[in-house]
Length: 239
Image 1 (tube, one colour):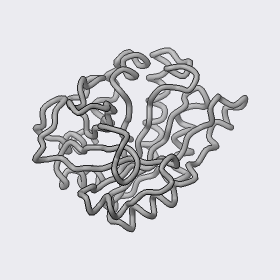
Image 2 (tube, one colour):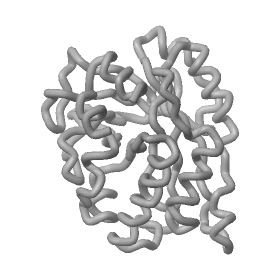
Image 3 (cartoon, one colour):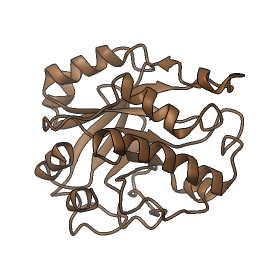
């Protein structure tokens, strides 16, 4: 997998983008009930990442109940994106305090977060960000790294693909101690709302594979930029 995702941004500068070699995309969830998929494609977007699942917040009393939420707009968004010709994939909003990484990965896989080698399906994405009650969901840095590894290893064992990891530099440094454990496996999806570029790359990744640049995509959701050419995006999808 390392060779696959590293090829997706080959020779691009760390923290920067070659404007001749980028692909527009976006990410969406039930917070965007109406999305103009065809308009997005016609404007140049070629991929979308769609929320599939998340445990509830705050954590339930039983760990097994922490795998219960399916985004109500997932099927609509996935079918709409497919009809428009977009490369698409799903993401899981992690709540590490609710249940194990393996339990959440299996739930994600069972409800639309899987991967197939059809050339149109991205590997799943693990969304690691701030908790609703605490920045790091109540976990210490070592426990957080172990939780992420549990999710990634479970997903990889079932699909042969390493999930992408979505995060911010601040969250990754604060909650994992700037762990370098995943930078040769999982492509980095880095969030930084700025016109000045993706900024500091955490965790020893040499670059971001996707940059989430703002929350105001014209056709619905957040604006994303793939750090490479369309052929490389298709390679990431094919595996």
